[in-house]
Image (cartoon, rainbow, N blue to C red):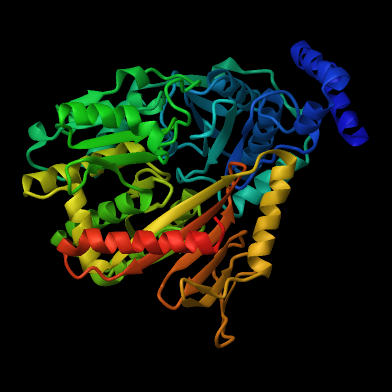
Length: 568
């Protein structure tokens, strides 16, 4: 506590504003536990950016912690591009303080002689990614905490290709930030270097999105969509993109259409959570809609619900939507003739079904660590290859390479195209998914996410992963574990033969078991939330679509058994 109190007292100097000093003095005098939470560590600029709870202190998002990051980023940009006018584009979402923090970040960069393009109002993350290349910028920043609770904020940093920063830039930027003190932040804005942007960039992004996401689906007039932005930024883009693509039958959930950082109608603004789409699903049942789409606050994730075999609206998971989107794109490429340099991609904790499809279509399959920055990096690392599309289980998808991050705007349009086309052909999104299971194998996944908050929670998560590694699972539902993939050591080991293979990916705190029957169990801590996540994937053959219900029930029973064995 002496060390924590000493750190807090450094925030009582004249460099910090009076409100900050007043709050810290009150914590020192009256709330030791809260003081500890605020100052026991520095909120780190991680490998893609920074995210945390808002408030004063080194372990919180505020103008000083973001300011230090921004100063470090500015220093790095100027050193990397010494003979160029450095340009950065900045966007922000609907969260509390996002607009004022975006303005602060802009002012710091301008104070360092950097040209800033600042969106005049909130915009989606995919539009920010697009704008980096469109405006020929050296970097981009979006102020967002994605789908975290209302008390969170943060920012993500993008590089010249429009993708999130990756090695070696991330480590070099972090080193620059860590070399600074708060007093090194230059808050003296040069307003002449800050330019507000909006409609021109919107127009370019909308055109590109419609171009990449449209495939001349028929019967659009008879296809009913219910859309909710969950109080986030997608209201600025998705209705317009759907309209331009020819969808006239779009019902917007008005109670959730106004951007609001409190997210008043949902417990969590996360389309991964069924509760978040309850209002939209209810409306869809009322009006007989074909599809429900909901997006998270910064519009990089999308949740889709469609009519199942009984005609009821059912929420699909990220693996299911990713599989069908990718299959649709593969079919379109196949119609035009593969050139031989195409690839699809996903992450190590997503469905193995993606690899099976790649093999069937004869295209390359690439896999990455969790996080879309790694998929973006693939595109940069293989400039002679063509990225068809790819995604991850956490409800993110990217169509082509014109955006280099999860893009719920274009992916929403793609999902509607698939479903409208299926309906015109007497099928449905759901039936097409079952047909894919028949063709490539029936893969079913389940995610278990455990929240562990605070200092003790972080230690508990750390210990759970140690236990998972040091007390290895030997079999799962009667199937022997064959491979243990340890991404911390970059070694995959066959526990039956002793064979070892190198994992050619950056080190990461992930452990994956694979059994004889292809069941996979992965464990990893979240990089952005106080959570530990367990990913279960199992599979079997589906001989014909008529067997779907019974085989689906068998896989459900198997997953329940796995969870019971693992005490999850």
